[in-house]
Image (cartoon, rainbow over all chains, first blue to last red):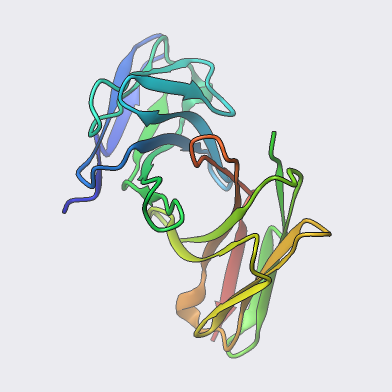
Length: 114
Length: 112
């Protein structure tokens, strides 16, 4: 199993541009999450999903959108990028029937908005 | 909603000493408390976790204790080694969709 994969690894955006961060998991996990991690800070939940077709806001959803059309994929969309969205983005997944909801993280996407 | 506070933000110890990191949580309904280790430039990885029906759990050199009454839990690392140097995050689980609320992180430095 590849686990949780994210693309791209790095990206530089200009202010006002849009992009989609891709996240795929091959563990058949129902739950998926998007976090952002600012330098020297903790992980803040942006959006999460408990299954295909279901998404919900986390702690910091403004400026982002998500969709969950399949169990495997959970893309994160940034519209009108702002410098405040410069961060490292981590996708994670877990299973409600798995080991105590352990979350498995992807390798992260480092995004810079200038 | 849940709020998790973590202390200290930085911790420096000598190799072989013990390290303790403490977290408090606000939601008395939270029932699962994992600890993640994040090495520089890497993804967070689970190192130990505890459920609310257990007071203590140990795995080799690491242990976690939970005080439900006081709503705090702690990570204990004994006989620290340089490879323990990393950022450690605690978290509390909100029952909605298994989502975790993370503490701010503790940067642990183990000096040889």
